[in-house]
Each structure stands twice: as C-alpha cells, then as structure tokens.
Amino acid sequence: MAIVSKFRTLLTRIAPKLDSLAARLIAAAAVWTVLGLAVGGFILSHVYRTTIAARFDEQLKSDLDELIAAAEPAADGSVSLAGRDADPRYARIYSGAYWQITPVGSSAKNAQASRSLWDKSITPTNERTIDGVIYGYANGPEDQSLRVLGRRIEFAAPAGQTTPNHAYTVLVAGDQAQIEADSKRFNGTLIWSFVVMGAGLIAAIFLQVRIGLRPLRRFSEALARIRDGYARRLEGHFPNEIEPLARELNSLIEHNTEVIRRARTHVSNLAHSLKTPLSVLASEAQEAPKPLGDTISHQVTGMRRQIDHYLSRARAAGALDVIGNRTPVQPVFEDLVRVLKRIHADRGIVIEFDCPPNLSFRGERQDLEEMIGNLLDNACKWAKSRVRASAGRQGSVLEIRVGDDGHGLQPEDRARVLERGERLDESVPGSGLGLAIVHDISKLYGGELILGESALGGLEARLRLPISI
Image 1: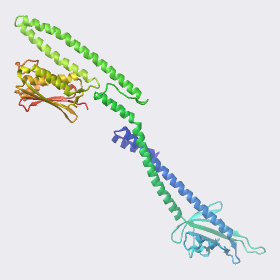
Image 2 (image 1 turned 90 degrees about the vertical axis):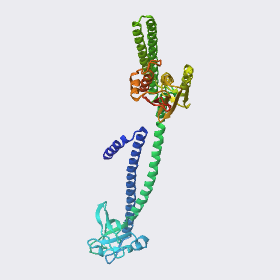
Image 3 (image 1 turned 120 degrees about the horizontal axis):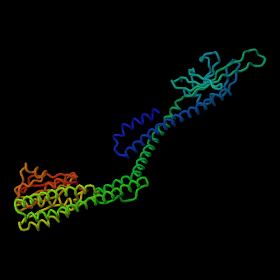
Image 4 (image 1 turned 30 degrees about the horizontal axis):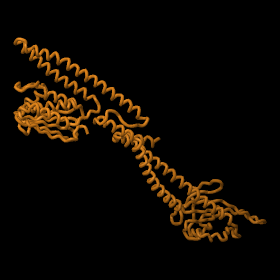
C-alpha cells in the first residue's frame, strides 16, 4: 500500500506537467513497468539466494553424514577417520571447507580437525537445532564467513567394559563466499536482462500508445481540415469508440450550416424589402418642395448608410459561425482591381497590387470582397493618380495593405472615421461608411484595421485577418 501511495503521489506531481494524453499514458505505463521489474527482480534475487543457500546446506549435510559414517572410536578415546583427509577440499589449508570433532564437555582446543583448519578451531554462533541437526555460523581462519552444520554422536563402550559412552560434537563448515559470488553473478545478469526487458517494454508501450491514439490524431486532422476550409464535414473511417462522436459532430456542422443559411437568407430579404421603400422615398423627396424634400433626402441617406452598415455586420457575424470557410485572396484582388480600373478609368488611376497565389483567408469570400473592395474603393476616391495594394503572411496572420497618394488623414481623424463612420469631406461621393464597415467586419473575425501614412504620401490601411493554412 505504501508503494501504491507513493506512486499516486508521483503521478499527481508529474501529471500537470504532461499536456499530452499519449505522454501521460506512456509515463504511467513506464513507471508501473519500472516498479514491476524492480519488485520482480528483488523477489527473484531473494529466491535464487535462498535456493543456493539451501543447496549449500544440503552439501554440508551430506558431508556431515559421510563424516559421521566414517567415524570409528579409537582405543585412546579419539575418533578415527581413515582416508578422510584424502578429500582435497579438507586437505588444503584454509580452503574454506572444514570439519571438527570435539568431545562433549571439552573445549575446541582438544578437538580433532581437518588439515584445512591447520592450527585454528571453529566456534559456532547463532546456533539452532532442527531434527537433530545443529545450524549456525562462525568466523573462519581468515575471517571467512562460515556456514556450520553439526550433530552430536555417541560411541558405546566396548562389550565387557564398564567405561562410560563417549559423546562427540561433529561439525562441518563451508565458506559462504561462494554463495555471495553466485548471487552477485546472478544479480548482474538479472539487472542487465531486466534493463533490456524494461527498455523493450517501454518501447512497445510507446508504439502501442502511438498506434492506439492514431485515430484521435486523424480525428484532429479532419477537424483542422474543416477549420481551414478544405472540408465541410469529418471525413474518413474511425473506430467504434470515436465513430458516434464523428457522426454527432457532422450532424452539428450540418445543422449549424443550415441555420446560418436561413439567417443569411432572411438578412438578404430584409435588405431588399427595406431598400425598395427607401428608393421610393428618395424619388419622392426629389419632387417634394424644399425644405421638406431636403430633410427627407437627408434622412433617407442616413437610413441607407445605417442599413448598409448593420446588414454588413450581420452578414459577417453569421459567416463566422459557418465552419470550414476558406477563401483564396489573389482571385478576390484580381476581380476587384479589374472592376475598379473600369470605374475610375476617366481619372487615370493606376492600381498596383502584389499578392502571392497561395494566400487564403479563413472566412467568407463575400466578407473578404467587401473589406478589400471598400479599402480599394476608398483609396481610388482619394488618390491623385496611384493606388498600391499588397497581401502577405506575417507569422500566423494575413496582412493586407492598401495605400494611395492622396492628401491622407490627420491622426485625430482616423479614429473618428473607424469608430463612427463620419464623412469628413462631402465632396467625394459615397456613404462614408467604407472604412467603418471594414473595421467592424475585421473585429468580428478577430482581426484589426490600422490606419497610417502611405509610402505614396496619402493614407495607408493595414488590414490584419486570420489566415487559412
């Protein structure tokens, strides 16, 4: 439970830093994999050490049984072990394999011992007896850590003699360095094997997550195509878990498009229904006596300006809710420049424009036409002889510049023209709402219109709009 609690705490600290679903899945799986391998490695290492220690004890027990089986009482009260020292492990001095036979009640100094002990003796510690076998530990002749096994044996007195039975403690000992060496080799193999296995598992998890989340990436790409205007609905086949969401989104897009289409139809109908009565009023005002005729004409002109202004805003606001609009900029420029050259042909206005063919506006063509058309028309009205326009990409923004060589606008007048659509000069025909309409539509798209001084000497309008990638 403590490990699980620490793992949860670790995930809580890491999770806010991971802003990717794939990263979170991979990180969580990687942490669990590392923990699992670490715990599994610890258990395997412990089991292996326990196994080789038990096998070591079995070998010592076998040697102990052989030693006891070879023991015979001698006439002088000692124990005879004929041929026992022929075993090379017990014959080589300080080899790590030892035996010792001590009379019960005597000290280890009076014991018989293998040649490998030379002049040393074994004194067991931490002894415990299981089924008559004594298990313990001892320090060896060269400060070795020895595992000790022993038994107590008795030799009966020869027949006809009244001497007491002889009892001895028989011990065998082995150096545990072999256990440590085997454990170290096994742990080394275990570590690099688990490292390779862990790396392979994490790589497999990475591939699994990447492949498993690929439909979500395709889903995101399909949405991006709709946003950028390359598609009108989610296209492609998705897994069963995502397919219902795709269907619902397509239904929502279709419903949204239909609602906006109806709203824009109503806006157009309203425009036509209002313009006809206003035209009749304007015609009647021309024939009405003054000052009534002038008052009516003035009011009709103001109503037309307001209707054009707010209908443009309503149409642009409706277009924003239609997903997937994308309009190439160059064809719009070409069409508008062609028309304006004809309109202003008698004044000899030269219109220059530079627009790369790969630029696209993320919005309705009608709105882009209205914004660029108003900017170009305004520049042509106030220009002396030249109008220069250009379009380009500035980072993630579409920037359109339109300048003229007219007399321009004073800085204090620019804000009035944009915010209130005031006509500062009645000598030029028009409603005076062109720049204000461009300003309003650009704001609806999250853009902006900035007025400044043109390199030609007149006014320059800089329009910044969302670009379609």
